[in-house]
Image (cartoon, rainbow, N blue to C red; front, top):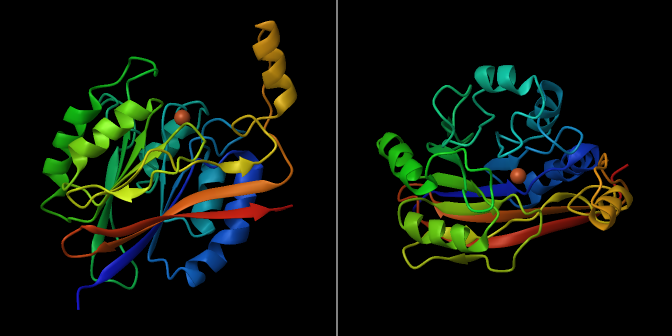
Length: 268
Ligand code: FE2
């Protein structure tokens, strides 16, 4: 029988409440869902913006195997060092080669005779126009990955749903899954694409429920209503974790299923 791999992808973790949620729920989810590998987007893990040595360590110790990021990756100074040192923390692959770290990594799957590639790519639509074409970047990265493994999960960190869907069709049949991140709002369109790639436009966030994309309501409302600058703070209270579970054939890399997984409650 073909070996299968069960991968959990956790959506954008926002600040302390998001990290607490992962620490609280991931150990039991690992058992309940028979998880083989866990990926999480951690670009908002530190105070709601960026990632630090400490926050990355917390998440890796909680059972995350690989962390992806996005447009906020360099917001905390120590991210430069972290990315250069820790191959389990990625930055988008379409940054210029001078950027520290890597946009993809191949890691072994514990307890299985297979390897998995995790790729992080950022979109261009409604994002700062600083990065290379995500589509061409995927071609370049896959050329390097395909001899190593066919089990490939791409975090496509992008704003526009159209660009995310276009990217999924471009990647269909060439990667195991394209998982959208960045908007912090889960979409209900998870599915298998015609050539076997699992896809969701956005997996959603792991952060406070009573918030505006994870940040405290008052300051964000003040900013929108007055057009004046405001210092945003991470919201607290009840937390929701948004994730997707992808099951795949380890040998062919084809996805067999994708489903949304959610947990909600107080996390201290
Ligand atoms: Fe983002």
